Image (cartoon, rainbow, N blue to C red; front, side, top):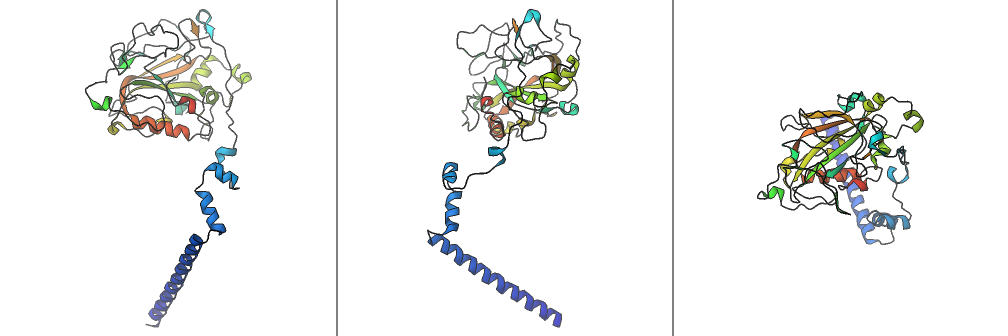
Length: 340
């Protein structure tokens, strides 16, 4: 009985103490709100100010991003393009249609594993309007989009200043509003609902994997972050093809969040139920880009390509989330927030 009384007395005392503390905090808060000269209120004003105002007030914003060094900056090893007669190795193929076999014989084997199984990580993500690759019945000259399609052969001749685009998928339907209803883009630039985009995730075993410097623009900085020219020159072609690769996946953008995938920055989507990342073409090739053609070849070869033969629908919000994630990286990835 006495034990219960002691316990009740202690509880009552604790409640009184908490009550007094609460009243004290409340009175202090009121005082701060009414006193414009209070140092504490000055801190509150600074916290709601812009970064520039913070710095002027002596409260510089301190984060790892403002002071830390990007160890991958300018790590690209410059290798000039060459004429294709003297090509340094296999080039990126266009046709990934199942059963198609290219004519160029190579003695380098592509990496057929999941890239993470070879200690490779994604070091960048970017995309192209239309597809660089060609898969009959999935993305080819018979696909469509709000801006039409391209003609065969694989690339039409461009007028001066015209953007080089690629093939379209077969999903687009101008009578279905998910392909035509505009989306309010907040982070990506120049993207269009209903269009086809080929997304590339360059991977490298020499990247700054698992660190704040992992993702880089341009992607070459990420690929070569922990590799110098002297070491590169000691590597056999097979070593490179086993340690550097690209994932490629093709999407038609829809304004429909039932096609939402939240984590595109980490790599392509693998979803057996939706058939995503299941039918893959794997080959050795090279890097691609606007500066390469059937006459001018890339010296960044050989590397492994793993390309999804199917085209998939994906929500505009998935891409906008990707662009947001790109903005959160230590390196400035602004140059990759739109198709080139």
